[in-house]
Length: 97
Figure: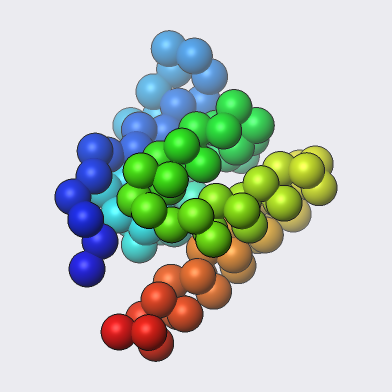
């Protein structure tokens, strides 16, 4: 079970809230599927995702997101890579329990 954590609010840019939030990695994954790509790029390259996931204690996932950030993927390739990475992480976590 994930520890209680503050929600992640997806913004498209500073001051431009998308109306989408996530309170768990599962919700985060669903949000990544539907938010604008600008929101994903905005947060990944500012390390917002990494900070939020660090607060959950998931260092391995943070390391994977940092690798994605360094790859400088854009648009659908970026979205797909994050979805695949988070999905894989969640599946591994599920098997460990």
